[in-house]
Image 1 (cartoon, one colour):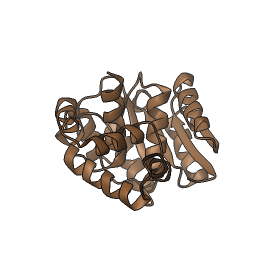
Image 2 (cartoon, helix red, strand yellow):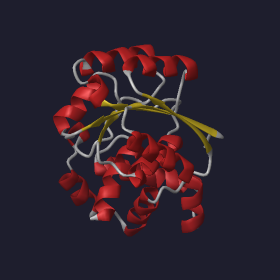
Image 3 (cartoon, helix red, strand yellow):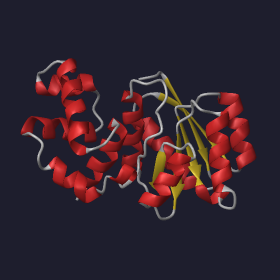
Image 4 (cartoon, helix red, strand yellow):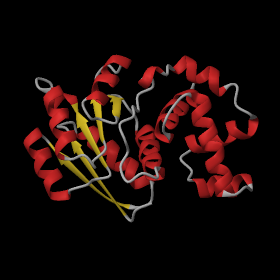
Length: 214
């Protein structure tokens, strides 16, 4: 995990910025959370901080030109993972956001716990930048119901791994908890993602968070 998390929140909603900042503080690492209240301010922030670990874009500040804004941001800052906050997430909205360059969407009422899990899972990704996969519960055609049915078919050990991932634990901590090697945890994680029909750990985290909270 990096020693400093750089996060950019493009929104005039102070509560959203506070939720992101609070989630980052829970990770016990220093964070720089920058709030940009307009699209021009967002560009200035991205030019200054180059490759932040996460950009949270409130669709409310780009409502009239949302598609053009997403496309421009993804082209100008390809290494900055971009999540869009929308009022009513849906599979269609998520897919469109992905096509335009976002990594996914989140509901406006998202809580600090979900943001913390998102940040933890982003830090666990092995790629230098999160690729174009959805973070919304219905992304890539994987519905919550389908996810729940698949999760029910996991072995007890793999279900336990999924629960620990949902708790925000790293592979190292999971290995210690289960008295197995990190390589075994990674193998279990790969098998879990395949079984659940998702591409990324971040996807599994957001879906599992809803599953285990129900």
